[in-house]
Image (cartoon, rainbow, N blue to C red; front, side, top):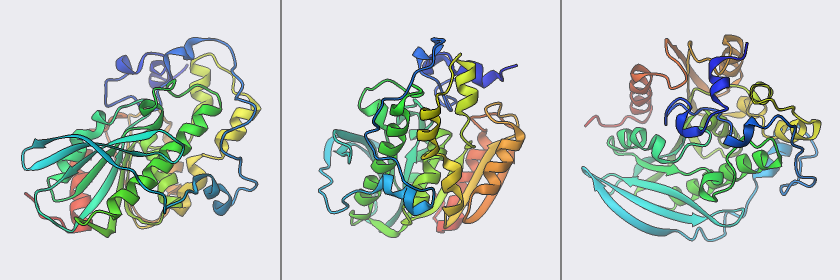
Length: 318
């Protein structure tokens, strides 16, 4: 029997498990019972090998290129300031983010936040605000397919790989943006990802060693086969080969620095064996915690994440 959350992947993102429980959500079009082949020629060249240096070539970019940041507006949130910004995406177009800053001049630690698949930046903004209140500069990144208004993943085409690559590249440019700020301590840059955001976090931390503190919430191995079966799809050989180049399990051992891995024992997105394999695969100075909770985890997990970040960065408690 298909597990509950995989069945929910067939619904619209807005009615799956609520705004904070989208996880690896299938797009509305996933109900079609046909296999969809990937586009013949991927936009990003396919790696010629499986070593990290081969895989990392997919995420190379010109770090000297102008970031091209534009502020679209700002608003206070208590003592914090929330700025709606855009910057130039490596793949073309504009990336969108919130930059949340404390009132003091710093230098502060800084953290990039990425939500689950097909979620908007608003869906992880509250967690970013909670951490920003402890004098952390928070950048809440919008995922590439949402920013560009393309069909939401999972399309079971080459687009899925391109979206993963583009959001990781946007994450690297977001790190550039943060490092260039005078109120940020470049030696203390972190990443906080939920579900698909944890998938992308493992890749980002493996290919960009500026991330010295990483929080991976409700992540796990690729389960595209399960999602495809739940939506009456058949994965093509070409699609599976393409997605193997962005398989988070290939990058996880190269994650370094301080890492917090959180999962829920009642998360029906993954089996217990899959969650164990994910937790064991991740490198770094690792803390793993499992909660009596589902995919969205619970208040205890959020409290633990905040306390863990506070301890590692020796933050002041407001």
